Length: 132
Image 1: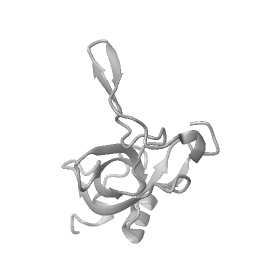
Image 2 (image 1 turned 120 degrees about the horizontal axis):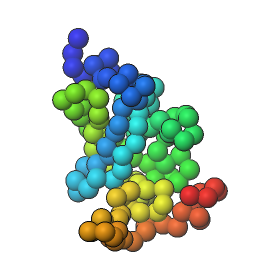
Image 3 (image 1 turned 135 degrees about the vertical axis):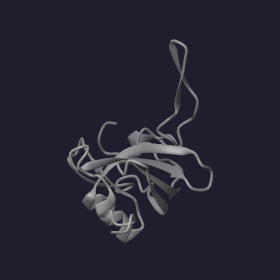
């Protein structure tokens, strides 16, 4: 079997899911970390839009389904243990984070404190119907 087949990915190590790191293909910025199950992986491959598995919703999460901030898949990489994916994406709408920031990594740990290092791109209360 070719290493490019979904059966090469170890979805079973974490109970049917693998961690996925999303990285901006143009800038190299790390945007977020989420999970995919086999179905989300296959949908991503088929549509070219990144789909994750939401553990809190217990269902597929089509990135941008509420906000319109979708991720177009540019390329996908599998790590050496076959249990983590890196997706390089084109982030549509400017923000990957549901809290309104470009990246989910908008806070920096410095010594004993945490410092905000970015400004929000959008107001999540104006975009989402539910509390975030």
